[in-house]
Image (tube, rainbow, N blue to C red):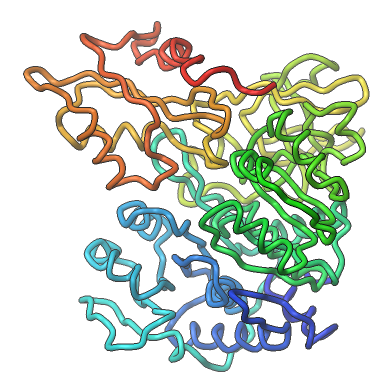
Length: 525
């Protein structure tokens, strides 16, 4: 089996060229056709001037062209950057500038939204429009071409598995997204590991409902390609749409995050005999929801998982262990070791909380263009094998866990200030920065508080600048305009005077969040 991510498609096409690779809105694409498109677009990118190691950003909803563009970028020796389709233009611009994107693949409608901000993306050379029918817009300094024009003969580029393949952007605690760099080896190893414990096979039909900008969503695709299975691409509007497509398309595998599972668990599934397994990651699934899913889908195996983008996936709980330990995040995935370490790097005893540290081939290459952040997460550990004098780089999650006597892991808390809402990791600083742009706010603090459906709701406390009367509706309107829906605060409060400080002089975020812990009631155990 290959060590290069794009070769997953080519090898599947060699094994079974007529097997269905992708399905989208009633259209189907076999592996031979997909491989041909990837090869042609890789050649097209090359003719547009894309060099080895340059970045191709893809800002699209899930569709055939999205998948082709991502893997064609890798096939030409480039690095693909999937951009979450719900991000607003300013956030897209930050990613394009940060990763020095040379090529952007997007739709005509999205290009019109980006038209102004693209002027600040000085390294961008080419924009490829997938659905161009009329005359393309003109943007100074950019070559704008239609998708159909991007075809060529791909010249094989010397590539090895340790080369960069992708940059996945995830929110950072400093308020700006951080790009996690992944190699071909990282992505292929992740696909192989997941395939092993989910026992995927070529006759699986995997529903891709999560964004491909999530490592969790992208892995549904790579796992399917690894075994030659079918990926059904879906941009759903309502949870009931997922239930309908599971039945209509005879889905065998479904992945989702806790807020979506909470909604799906409340629906009438009837019979879904094709569904062989479901998976959860992106946060703990409430006990009541877990019970509802087990009752609604008695034939489906449920895999509970834990992961973080910097090391992809770390643990999973076998379905037959759920009844005995429903609160556990399980044990390490195949070909990985998960350690629980103290601050000095020594190993915690059973029951002793410590930091979850992941070692193995899934550990990413670091943060793009940010050495300072890289050394805070990608740090050396000392292997326990006798006689080894070298150290290796492991991924330090920042999350506190403990291990029981049998080696099962349990999540305790997230150390940083990230908000986990609707399956997304949200930076409180990014929300605060938007509020400060109004020039009405003196101080702003955002944090997560327990919510029975969202996992965490976003709460914001602000104070007004001198002589200004704050209007919460105006602040909310600004947030809705500048932030994607999942980052818009669920609760606003205006307070008088200065917000409380901790001993270091910073706003005491933890103290304020404790005051609102029960605002939305108690979460499920």
